[in-house]
Structure formats: C-alpha cells, structure tokens
Length: 191
Length: 447
Image (tube, rainbow over all chains, first blue to last red; front, side):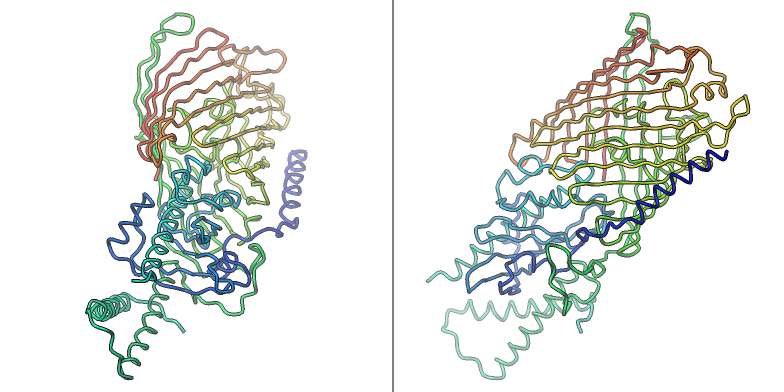
C-alpha cells in the first residue's frame, strides 16, 4: 500500500510540475473589434466606417452569388485607404455555430480576395474552434467553387460545424464585397 | 456613453430609417434639379444623419454580441494577436444545446468462418441518443456535458443504459496555450474516443480497435490542462485509475469506472500531443498510465498494483474529397496473473498481459467533384487487426478467438453534413475460425 501511495505522489508531482511550468507565451484567444481591424490593414491605413442598406433584391443577389443565406439588410463595413488608395475592406459576420453565435472579421483586399480572417467571439466550447493554422488557409481565396471545405479548404475533424459556417461566412462576405463595389462603381459612373 | 438598444429603440431606429428613406427617395425620384435647402432643414438633416449613425453603430454592436462599450480608448496596439485580453466584452450567455444519435441495423451471416451455423439473429437498435448541454458562465468558466441513452430503454429487463458521458468545467485563461479542466472527462486517447459523432467517422460501427483495444467511450473523473501551443495541441489530465478486477480476456474496457462511485485508491496520468500545424492533418500520440489495483489484494494477501499503460499513435488526414486514418494502439497490464487469481480465471480465460491492434481506413467523397455540393457520397474501406491476448502470463493460454482481422467496406451518404446514412459489410476472421460476417445499415445525426 505504501508503494501505491508513493506512485500516486509521483504522478501528482509530475502533473503539478507541468501545471506550474511557464506556458503563457502564446497567442491569446480572441481579439476586440479594434484589434482585429488593426491587424486587418496596414499600420498607416486610414479606416472609415460605412453603412450599407440592402434591399430585399440586393440581399437575394448576394445570396445567389454566395450560394448561401442572404446578408442582413443593414451592413456596417470598414474601408481602409493608404495615401488615398484603396487598401481593402473589412466586414464582421456574426453567425450561429451550434446554438450560440460566433463573430469573425473577414478582410477583403481590393482585388476581391480574402486577406485575413480573425475570430472575435466564439460562445460555443472552444474545443469546437479550429486552430489558427486552419484560418491561415483563407488569404488569397476568391469567391469560386474552390472556396469550399470539400475542395481548397481542408476540414477539421471535430470542428466540422464551425468550419462549415465559417466558410459560408467567408463566401457571404466576398459576395457582398463584390456587390457593394459594383454598386458603388455604378453610382459613381458618369451619367 | 452609448446606451444598450432596447426593443423600443430598435423600433424607433427602423422608423427613422423609413422616414429618412422616404425623404431621400422622394427627393431623388423627383426629376427636378435639387434645390438648396434652407438652413433649418440643413441643420435638421445633419442631426438626423448623426442619429442614424449612432443607431447603426448600436445595431452593429448588438449584432456582434458586444455587451460592453464597443469603443475602447487607449488600447495598446496589438502585435500579431498578442494584445490585451478583450474577449470579456464579447459574451453570449445561454445554454448551448446539441446532440447526436445513431440507429443501427445488423444482419449477421448464417454461418461462421468455419462453416458452422452462427445462429445469430438480425438486430435493429437505437444504439445511442445523446444530448449535449453547455453553458458559458462568463469569459473564463464553461460547463460542458453529454447525457447519453444507449439502446433506447433503461429497465431491468433491457440492456439500455443512461449515462453521463462527460460533465466538466473548463477554466479558459484567455490564452489558447493553457486552459484547465475538471470533472468527468473523456480520456484523450485515439481518434474516436473524443470525437465519436456518427457523421465524423466512416462505417456504421466504430472501428473495433477503438472499442476493444482503446475503449470508447472512455471517461474518468479528474482534472488537467489543455490547449494549443504553436502547431501542437495537447491534453494532460490526472484521473482516477481503472479497476483491474474487471479486466477480461476480451479486453480492458470494463475496467473503466465511468465516474460511477469509482474506487479512488489508484490514479493515472493521461495525455496526448497532436501536431495540427498542417490544416486537415492530425498526427499524434497519446498515453494513459497508472495503477489499477484500487486497494484490492491478491489471494495471497499482497497489494494489487496492476500497472496499466495504454499508448497509441494516430494519423487523420483530409485533402479535398479524400480522407485517410490510421491508428496503432497497445496496452500492457502488470500483475495479470494476480488479476486472474482474483477472478478465478483459468486456461485461456486469462487477462492479456499485452493487447495490441491497428487499423487503416480510406475514403473519397465523390460528390466533392460536384461544385458547391453540400451532399457527400463516400465509398470507403478499412482494415483492422487486433488481439486482446497478444501475450498472457506463464501458465495460461491464449484464446485464438481474440486474435482477429476484419475488413469493412461500404458507402456513406450525407444529404447534409450533419445527417448520415451508412451501408457497409464486415468480413471478420479469427484464429479459431469462428469469425462471422455481417451487413450494417446506420442512420446518424448530430446538431
């Protein structure tokens, strides 16, 4: 019995040694809106907040392009410029994962490709949140059939629902960004 | 100070939008050159624009789930994510509900491997119906649980069980490298034990290696740490040990105490380390080691240590529509002869000193070739080999029925990602010639 207690003590010591070791030198979980925006654009960028009001027809058109659900009628987005030149646009997309919501930032470059995705909030247990490397697959992706967890994006076992809703959000933002750019171009065209 | 937007506020905001929309559209639709507005109207329009801006910001904040001030002044500039903890302003309270389940039909071959009648009757069963409840108390404390019903009915004359599969509290540090967990937890071994929802694995039945060699669903009570550090993901828990007195010749699974009035004299350390740096790939290893004597003594009066150790190596890889899984696992049991004596096991009834098994599985989603298809159709094949008596103590013999190989091949259809229909055949052989083939159909879901 003494041996048994000794072994249990050894196990506990080994375990506590790990617990007390310095492990706090890594990235934190979530960003605030301002932090995410700073990461999305160059340091010298001037960021302006804009609001778009989408009609039912506009929303349906964005849904058709993304192949998913329509965006909300009221969309706030952040346009960055550097020396007066377009440096990209960032959108925040909030969607339900299982029961509770997740909010992500999707930054789109002037060519219409994703430049960054950041997670701002994730209310489900964090075990259902993919690792950072998974989000690293998005930069450079444009709205095409390849932007799918069954094609150019690899899925994550154990976080399949989060993966799917994130891909849907990325497609929705890209479709919205293209739509808003086209609309702005039309409105500014000489009549 | 921005005040939270109430329902009345939202109605007011919508009314204001409509008013402004009418105002703007009426002026733009009119085919007349714009007239300069008088100063009073100009001032009023400016005020309305300001109000509209405030309201849209409020709505955006609500949609993003911000429960505190959206604008944080004087926040230091972050460097690649190393910023101040700010997640506390993003909290969504409430119970998260989910679940999964599977219904399994099994039809066995009329004859065994050696041609003798099997006398097995087809069965159909609600194998599992599981409800998941989670609750986020705040940014740091999260409760997570699963309550499982097996075989539909729990009664004296039925084989059904109601089980708490896990129930634990997480403490989230706000840093993904280190989080703490305590409660009834899934043992972090293999590929199936932690991720066993039917749409996650191919095959109507779980791989037998991850049932017989690595028990699933295996859980014990304890505490530990988990997180991600760079390209690695880890778990390390201290949990109550197994109960060696319940080991058997066909595996150690019954030694799991499942958090039910568990004997707590012996404890165990368990953990896993996975490389997750390459999206779609999990490559790792896990272990479980500790005594399983739980204070019991052998017939000769000596304390039973029954040191039990499990190890596994695993790979899960996905690329486009293709998937590949492989796992090797082994367990060793100390004092196996003493366990036999406690249980009066003789001859080939012996508990194995060593159990070993492996499997490899591959599948391809042919509908991944169809653009934007949400459906999946995955033909797959799996090969498994295991032996629960790879070695036995001196004076005992191995039962060749426990030395098994098995092919599984079939097709998995998912009309949507969370619903799955599986058809497969299993061709099982053992060294005794008593293996039996079977056909399986399963319906599964998760939400």
